[in-house]
Image 1 (spheres, rainbow, N blue to C red):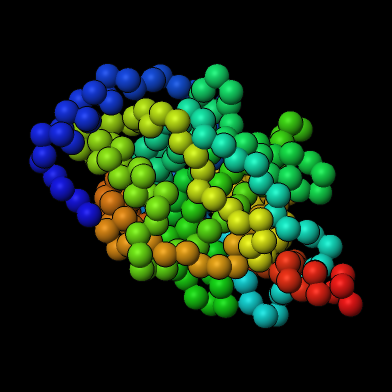
Image 2: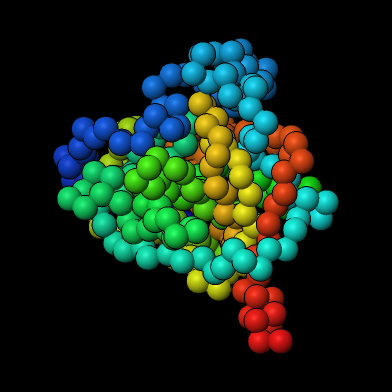
Length: 280
């Protein structure tokens, strides 16, 4: 997958470096970007201490609806009223940013901020950014995966909805393949950000079955009342792509440990169940 040292890639990195923008991500407050934390369980800045590092992060310790969670048969309930996923994504200006603890695609700095929207219960949530965690943060039936993508959406009233996609090793992920050369530039040049240009989000199938539950951000300040939508289908990613994402953050894990379910329900929506039910 990697082809280091070619003149073309070196020139491309140099040209992209000239286009670096000084951006201020409009939703940076939701990911704790300004203050230091890490994922090392033996560190004083690790997940078990997040709630003590800053008064604004107390929810990381005291919250009762925290994410990620382990989805099991015990907490799943089929819900036929949720409806199919309704997304209207489009290509728009994007920047790739290395935040030190993850790699993020930021769609908020163009002339028309946001890469489209997700409709939930009649409310539009604008896709502002996506980022990756390795290993996965959520688990399906006690099983973790090498990678998880979070697509963060925010509504006009500040409500947050996140689509999560889990990946197992296999064929390369097309979205990451499209971003390969920009990741290489971040790694080679040790830049904080690089201009990607116009970029479409990864596609979300309208009829895709999914899990939905109420949780939180998985980074400080661990804000709750986040609507989580986890695609039930596990996609594939190559080992090289996972390695590249991890190399950009110095090979470190960036997954928060599983949080208590505290009696919450996880709702499963399967379109074909809904359609069979409606036609019976």
